[in-house]
Amino acid sequence: QKEVEQNSGPLSVPEGAIASLNCTYSDRGSQSFFWYRQYSGKSPELIMFIYSNGDKEDGRFTAQLNKASQYVSLLIRDSQPSDSATYLCAAHSTGFQKLVFGTGTRLLVSP
Amino acid sequence: GAGVSQSPSNKVTEKGKDVELRCDPISGHTALYWYRQSLGQGLEFLIYFQGNSAPDKSGLPSDRFSAERTGGSVSTLTIQRTQQEDSAVYLCASSPSSGSLDTQYFGPGTRLTVL
Image 1 (cartoon, each protein chain N blue to C red):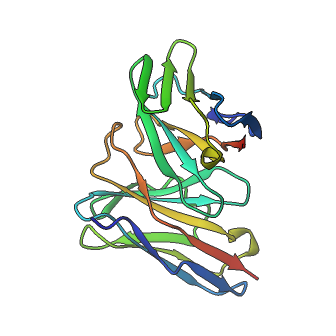
Image 2: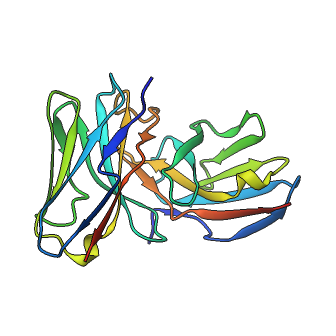
């Protein structure tokens, strides 16, 4: 069983719509969660991190964390074609100083 | 300031050869991580350094893989007797420390192809 699960997609949304990316994790002790964006052939770049239950907003991005359900999500408002990429969810592993990554969700935003 | 740098950007080698991959972290970052990303896969943790020591080597796939870090800065990942299954992008990341709230910043990666 993977420790961090994501739907591989692709998730297709029209330009201007809200894209909702989801992630579940198995380690109940994980304290912090990170969303990275990865364009094809490029390295991951940080979008947001969250460690408290609830919502955290940054511009067009909102991260949501529900520790009881072991669920993390990323909402992208007013999606743009430039948002088309693979989005990686990562959990900071309890007791170990490493990030455990999901396999990523590919997002396609059509003009 | 400068980000994480890695060299070479691409490496093609023959099966059985040894390769060295280099990572230069962000200045002042004490924690350094190596990950591997195979085609269409997520990132697989390999090893983590805090300063020059490696508290967690749990992700190294076999004893052909080793890594060191000197001076609390540059790290080298060495793969001996490379195999075709070692082909992947090797990513290095650094963070200010190793706490759970510390963001890891990634370098551009080294694409390794073993023929």
